[in-house]
Image (cartoon, rainbow, N blue to C red; front, side):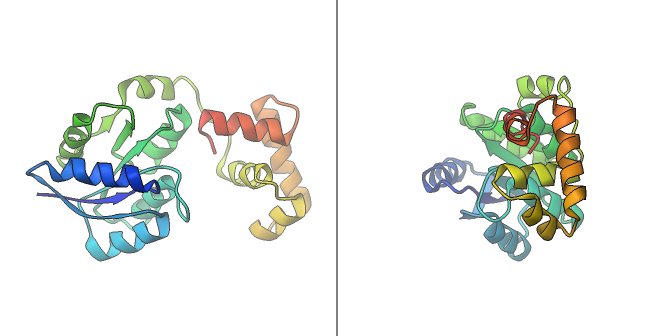
Amino acid sequence: MIRVLLAEDQTMVLGALSALLKLESDIEVLGGVVDGESAWRELQRLRPDVLVTDIEMPGLTGLELAQRIQRHELPIRVVIVTTFARPGFLRRALDAGVCGYLLKDAPAEHLAEALRKVHRGGRAIDPQLALEAWSDADPLNDRERQVLRLAGEGASAGDIARQLNLSQGTVRNYLSEAIGKLGVTNRIEAYRLARQKGWL
C-alpha cells in the first residue's frame, strides 16, 4: 500500500483529491490538512510514504514543506499538485527534492499513476513544464528572493532589516541587486516579474 497525506488549502479540492485516491486499491489516504504547519505536524506523526501538496498554503508553502522534509532527511516523497505552471516553481521544487510536479488541470488518472511511479523511486513531472524550466533560469539568490518577497508584500526597508537581522543598507543593496538582475526599474516591477516567473 502507498500511504498518502494530502495538504491542500481549498477544502473542495482536498475532498476531491481524497475521494479520487480512495478509489485506488493500492493507495491509502491517511488524512488531509489545509495548511503547511498542520501538514508538518501530521508528517511527523503519521510518516506517510508520499505527501501530496499544493504550493501556496497558509503557514508553510508546499516548497517549504519539501525543504523541511529534505533538511530533516525524512523518508517521505513529495508530489506537488498545483495550478502554478511556472518554470521557476518547478526548478525550486526539484532543488527541494520534490519527486512529482503535476498541474491541477491534468487528467485525474495521472495522479494515481504519478504516486505509483514516485513510490517506486521515479519522478513524475509535467513534460511541457520540464522543458520550459530549463530555458528560463532564476537569477536571484535566496537572500535577494527573501528581501524582494517582503518588499513586494509592503514591508519597508526598516521592517525587512528587523525581520532578517540585516542593516537597512544591506536590505537596499539586495533590492538593488534583484532589480538589476531582473532588468526592471523598481521593486514593485521586480516583485511582479519574479512572482510571474515563479521565482518567489
